[in-house]
Structure formats: structure tokens, C-alpha cells
Length: 285
Ligand code: SAM
Ligand code: GLN
Image (cartoon, rainbow, N blue to C red; front, side):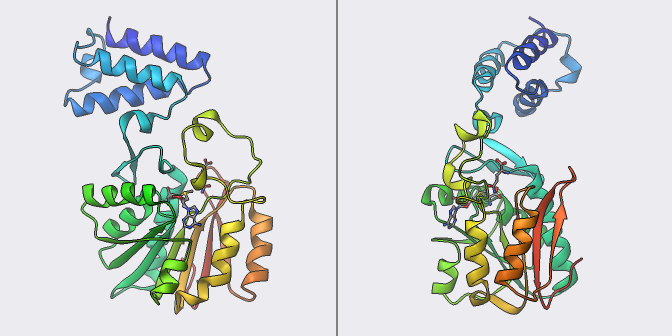
């Protein structure tokens, strides 16, 4: 069968199962890039024998709602290859935006010298590796409560040649215990309310410890706001990802927990409220 015919066949099957049909080309591009041949040049030719079994087996898993990143064993984030499996959240495009905003604020507030930065709940290590690679002045710490996630994050650091110090523990505890003081705290905590309905590909395949943030989804922000002064220098900022529908509750929480401290909520490229920045003697971009 020709490549184009395979693609049409699986696109139709995807549509039947409410899976975005673009997934087929995205998956095929990943497999063929590894084989170092140009998919588009051969599109109307027979699918090569060596690709058929991998492609069809992978597509069956994808049709079964398994995320493509799990089938491939990696995902792309900010141009970096991030190993993933069922122990970590697959890094999301919104989180790339969080990284870009953090980097811009580092430039603005800490234009020279070392910048001590921590990624709390690092999961795959995507944020930590990106900040570390994009800003060589960053001295990076990454934490997670999940030992399994830390194994993956270490792998991510290794394959991307990033120097990161990892600690296991509950939110800020590993930093408090070690008396560490930060210029920048970044955190994409689990923020989905416990009773929220979600897609099968997420709930069945991604770790619940990475998704759910208590009854209102804000449990981990409460914890960080309560303890953050113990781990921040006088001049510092914090950048968080948050749920698109949490603006009101989040504003109330920041104002109650950190009275008088300037903050802003930023939208992602889909126009949804998605990031929170809190500034201690620092400036917005
Ligand atoms: N930073 C990654 C990213 O942005 O793709 C993963 C974010 S995921 C939404 C949240 C992460 O927080 C998970 O890796 C989870 O294991 C971790 N986590 C959950 N509870 C935690 C806790 N009490 N202390 C530290 N990390 C925790
Ligand atoms: N954005 C993720 C999702 O919708 C959740 C990430 C998180 O809880 N921090 O599945």
C-alpha cells in the first residue's frame, strides 16, 4: 500500500474515534525522521517494509487513546527532546510559554551573574532543562515528590546535557531543609480539581499525582504561598502555570496569602488565563 493510502486509512479511523487526524502525519514524521528519509518526497510511493510494522502497531495504540508521546517514548518541548513514560506528565505547549515568560523576566530582573532557580514538581524535567539550556547563568534545582518522575527527569537532563541538582520531597520542603535561597521559583503544580471530567487519553495514561490539586485545584499554590518567603531571596519572582478557569479564585488566594505583593495573570496563546507571576522587588516584563 502507498504511504498516502496508509495515511488516509488511519486518518479516517482516527476521525471515527474522535482522535485528531493530524496525529497520523505527526507520528509518521517522527518515525521517518529517525530513518532519515524525506516523507513528502516518497508520499505517493509504497510504504517501505521496515516501517510498516512499527507504524501500524503504533497507530493501533494511538487509536486506543494511548498518547503518541508514550508510543514514541519522548515528546518535544522548546526544541528539546524529553523522554516520557507513564510516570510523568507529558509536557504541554502552554508550559513552553511559561518558560518563555520566565526567561524574559530573568533577563529583565537579573541581567548578570548567577541566577538560582528551582522547578518545583519537575515531572519529566522539561521546564528545568529548558531554563538551564536557554540561560547558561541559571543554576538549576529541580524537585518532585515522585521518585519515578525524578528518574525520568534525570534522564531528560542527561540526554540534553543539562546540569541540574535534583531533590525528592514535598513541595518546598527539600529547599527549606537545605536552607536554599532562590532568585526564581517556577512551578507547574497539579491543578485539576479532583472531581473534574477529563479525556481518557489523559486520565488513563498520565499519573494522577501530576494532575489533581485537591478539591478546588489550588492546594499546591496554597502550600507554596504559605512557605515561599522561607526559600526566596528578598529580590525574587515566582512563575506558575494555572488552570484557565482559576483567575478569580487565584487572585483571591494571592491577595489573602501575600497581601500587597504585586502579581499578574497572563493568558496563553489560546487567549486563556494560564500563568501567574508574583514579584518580590522584581518587575514584570
Ligand atoms: N513540571 C512538569 C511539567 O510542567 O510538564 C510536570 C508538571 S505536573 C502538572 C506536576 C508535578 O508535580 C508532577 O511531576 C508530580 O509528581 C509533582 N507533585 C505532585 N505532588 C507533589 C508534591 N507534594 N511535592 C512535589 N511535587 C509534587
Ligand atoms: N494542563 C494539564 C491538563 O490539562 C494539567 C497540568 C496540571 O495540572 N498542571 O491535562
